[in-house]
Image (cartoon, rainbow, N blue to C red; front, side, top):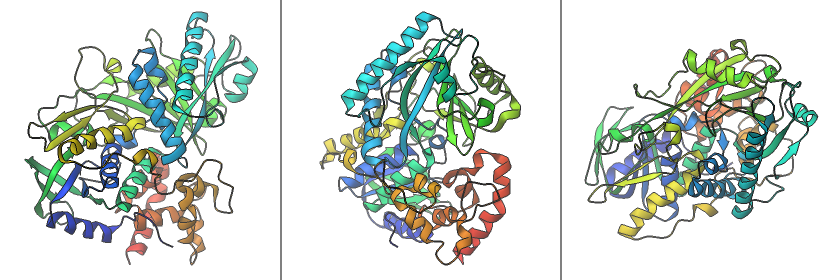
Length: 508
C-alpha cells in the first residue's frame, strides 16, 4: 500500500544528497510546527524547499503544548482582537480542512462557585459568547462546535463528577478545539510537505548562516557541507537567537501534569479554574483519552538554560494541583500524577511586564539583505498563518504563487463523522484515512496488532509505521514523539524492550 510523504532512513539519505548538490529556493531551519508549516507552504507554492532539524521532528516546544486548538477566548479578555480572530479562523481551517482527523471539539466547564463571584461568572459567560461570535464569523458551524450556555449544577457534575457540589451554582459550558497529539500534527505537516516535494532531513545541524549559504553537519556521519539557498527561514523557536543574534526573546515556561482521570471522577469535559488575583488566567484539566488528563498550564518568565526536555519543579506542580483542587470535592494530590512535562514559549521581547501579558501574535524579523527570515512568537493554533506570512515575504522579494495551505489537507485527513470501520478505534483516531495502511503492516504478523505491553493502548504496529513512514530513527523518536508513551515514565520503561526489538526487525 502506497503511503504519501513517507519518511524513513532511505528517504533521508536521498534528501540529504539532494540538498547538498543544488541551490534551493527556501531552506527552513527547525522541525517543529512552525518550521514544518513553512516547508509545506513553500513546497505547495512550487518553491524548491528543504528543511533541516538538528534532532527529530517535534523534538522541542511543539510536543509540550496543552494539546488545545484555541479559538482565541483568552485574547478577547486582553482585547487582542487580531490574535483572537486569527485563532478562530485557523481553528476553523484545522477542524474542517487540514486536520479534521486530529482536531476535534472538546467541551469545557467553568464552575460557578466560590472561586468566581456572580460578576466574574457573568464576565466569563460574556467572554465565551463573544468567542462564539468569532466562531460564527470564521465559518465554523454549530454542529462542529456547539454554542455556549449556562448549565445546572447537576449537569455540570454529570460532565465532571469530581466537582465540589455544596456551593455549586451551575456552570458555563462552552466548546473549543483539541488536537489528538501535537507531535502527530507536526509529523503530519512534515510528511505533507514531503509529499509536495520538500526535502525533510533530521539529525542535521545548522552551524552558521551567511548570505544564503548555510554550513551544516550531518549528525549521523559527522560530515559537514554547505547548503545554498536563496532564502533561509529560521524557525528554531526558543533557539532562534542562536541563528540570528539580533533577535531578543523572553521565554515563558509552561508546566503540565499528566494525571489519572479517576482523580476527577473520569470527566467527560475539561474543567477550568481561575487563578486567584490574576485576570484571565486559568488552570485547566483536559481529558487526554485512555484514562488520562492534562493539568496545566503555568506561564512564568524563564531565564535559565533552554533544554529540549525541561522539568517541572515542585513549586509548579504544587501550584497546578492546588489551583485545580479549589473546585474539586477532594484535593488532587501528587499520588494522582502519572507524568510531568514542560515547554518554552518563544516570545519576542517587546514589553517589560509579565510574560503572560506579551501578545501571542507572531513576529517576522528580516535580515538587511533579505536572505534570512526569523519567525518567532505565535502559538500552535496559528502555525499555518505564521508560515504563510513568512513565505509571503520571500515571494514578495523573489516572486511566486500565493499560499494555498488553507485548502491542502494533511496526510491522513478524513472528514469528521467518517463512517466507522472494522479497524482499531485508536488507529482511526490517530491516523485518520491512513489507519488502513497502518493496520496493513500487520497482515503477515497479527501480533503487531497487540499492545506494546499488557494494558497499554498503544499497538505494536504503530511503532513499525513510525519507522517505515514517519521518520523515527531510534527508541526516543518512537516512544516520545510518535506514540507519546514517554509522557508516563513508568509506561515508557515497559515499552522500551519491544521498541528496541521492532526497530531491529524493521532495519533487518
